[in-house]
Image (cartoon, rainbow, N blue to C red; front, side):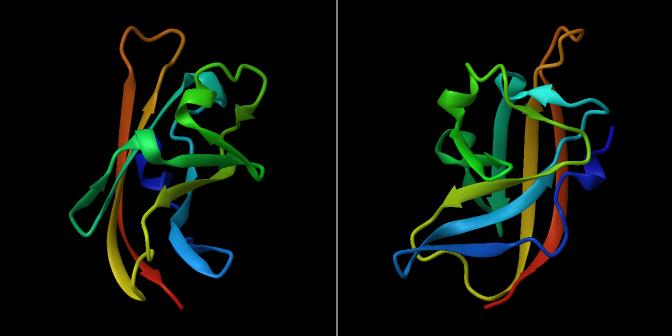
Length: 130
C-alpha cells in the first residue's frame, strides 16, 4: 500500500566500526498501515546496482536496537510502528563507493488477517556521500 515510502531519501551511508568500513545502511519505513511486532517482519531483500543482498545476513535496527532475522522471529514485545524510520544494515566489506546507487528493497511482512506473506517493493536512486 505504501510501497513508495519504504526507502527513505537521503539515508544511504557506509557503516564504520573501529575505522573499518563493514557495510552500508539505509532507513526504511513499514509499508503496512499498522505497526507490527518484529516477529511478523519476515525480512528485507536488498539490491544495489544489480548486486543482491539476501535478508538472512542483514541487520534491522529499531530505535537503535539491532536484531538479526533469527532474533526477530521470537521478538513479540518490540514493535515497528507506521511512519517510524528503522535502519536496514547490510554487511559488505568496504561498503559502497561515493556517488549514486540504484537501491531496491523488498519487504516481507506477515499480516495476521492475510493468508499469505505480504511483499512490498521500492526502488530509488540514492546518493552516497563521503
